[in-house]
Length: 337
Ligand code: NCD
Ligand code: ZN
Figure 1 (tube, helix red, strand yellow):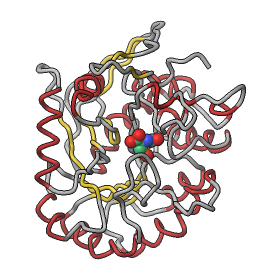
Figure 2 (cartoon, rainbow, N blue to C red; figure 1 turned 90 degrees about the vertical axis):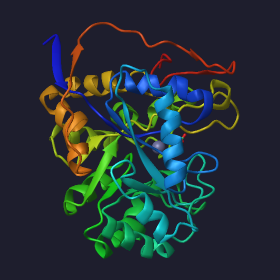
Figure 3 (tube, rainbow, N blue to C red; figure 1 turned 180 degrees about the vertical axis):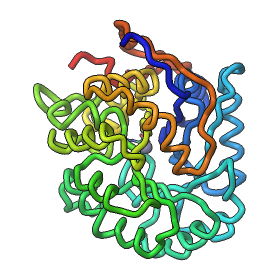
Figure 4 (cartoon, protein in one colour; figure 1 turned 60 degrees about the vertical axis):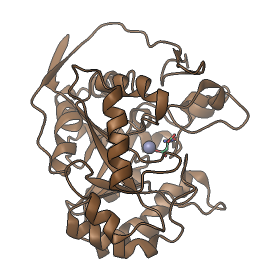
């Protein structure tokens, strides 16, 4: 097969950043995605309807005029978030709010310290039909980084899901067999996104033969048995798993340094890389569900109607993308491994 045509996909988890960087990140995503769930971890974070809609306007101003790209906005839950913030925000252009455990990842200092203190907020979200998006890692500094996602499931995720059975929860960017199996065993109100890096790579790709900073993201790449399980569940065609790139640009010099930032900027090739994975797994027939249907269905949004054609041909990722401020970004998978 040299070509496949699918319904235009959406990206259910990414980071656009702000300011001049939007002129790079928004067109890169609008190239092949119709909608995107835009993560709110700016500094300061996106905390209420007014901030979300102002950010949305800045994103739209950077979108190519012919793209009809639609950003879907997300609130960042903090210890100051009120039920009113949720009620005012909930609706079609702000379908979700994001829970970052404090200190879990890039720009999560503003996040919640006691997750249980947010239970009244989860109640309001459940009533308002707003989705809860979760970065699922425990943050106790003594906990081994490779165990953080697995431990989050029993300590936080399972109790939240049990207490709020109607609340739709997306377990974001899952990386372990434990997470995949938990999602499969849970009721229909729990689903997960999976990134290209966690399908393509395992921790050897981060650490063997020298540290590869451009493969460093959070949650961190796990051992190959976990990668294998993630590949199995997407190949199974289960509607509980859908596309979320977690595309997250960091300037080259902030990744190639003694204490490098976490995040892979995959927007330039994410759809092609996912397609490669499905092709390698001999299940290209499952790509459209994962990329274009299951996310929209879970969010109770209409599926896209436009089509997109992918053609099999050699293709080289640019090694580096210059930014307006003189910095550059290295796209995910550009560096020879
Ligand atoms: C993301 C970022 O850079 O904002 N980094 C990452 O490693 N994935 C934050 C996140 O999604 O955890
Ligand atoms: Zn992310």
